Image (cartoon, rainbow, N blue to C red; front, side, top):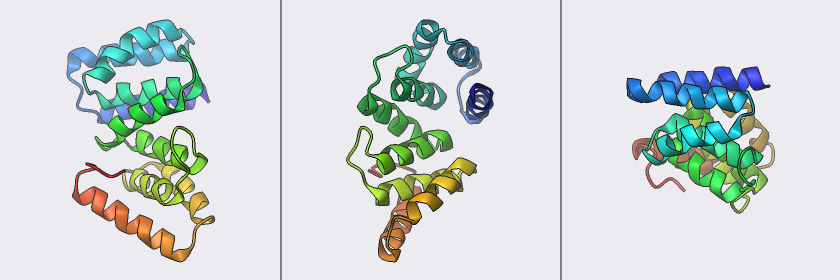
Length: 163
């Protein structure tokens, strides 16, 4: 699982527009996370997340969601996932969809869960496709249609004000 997280995190980092000098800091933060050196990971990732780097925001969200190096706080995880998702980060979009599906840090909302998972899938995130399909099984056809319309609208708005 940790190796999969590293691969996904590195893929996200490569797709980010982080300047070269920050790429190393993000990579070092992810490496520290994988070594379970959460204090170092937090020290490296938080400033970059605050500066708007989607990969750092996503990884900080993971830390809050899992309570690794910080007190577990789903609302804080949602905050960071939203920021990264709003920049088109597929991992963050899927994670945000899962938070809505499970009602973690937000009120449970299958329509928003479907929308974010669908957006993740449209960005090539395979887990997004699976998440979308699972939540679809819990929804009516009209709610699925609503979620699809919301996803299209969100794309048109470049992920702004989608929640």
